[in-house]
Amino acid sequence: MAYSRTPRALDSLLKDFMKNIPQRGELKRGMVLHFWPEVVGDRVAQATKKLHFERERLIVQVENEMWRHELHANRFSIRKKLNDKVGGDPVKDVVVRC
Image 1 (cartoon, rainbow, N blue to C red):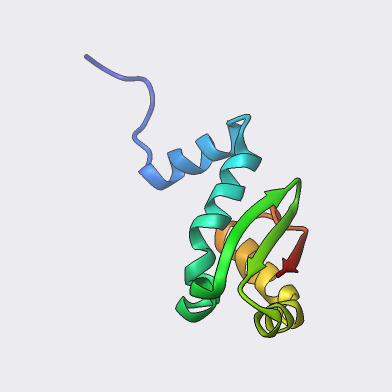
Image 2: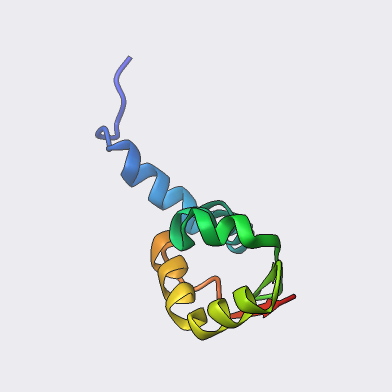
């Protein structure tokens, strides 16, 4: 059996698949939640009680005011690192709450 297409690398096929799926935004947001501990580190991840999206805003609930202040001060760099990690711009803003 002969195929008319040439073989392609798996990463190339996955990139094409990611570009064309209708739930791409939801998938990227899920990836952000998955990579949160890796981006912020174990100590901050343990201080995080709840993490979810409200549209394009990442809502982070932390244990106390000290952590809220720390994450609020670093929210722009955290947003950039998360967006770089997943590729694209799924996080428009990071909101930190106690």
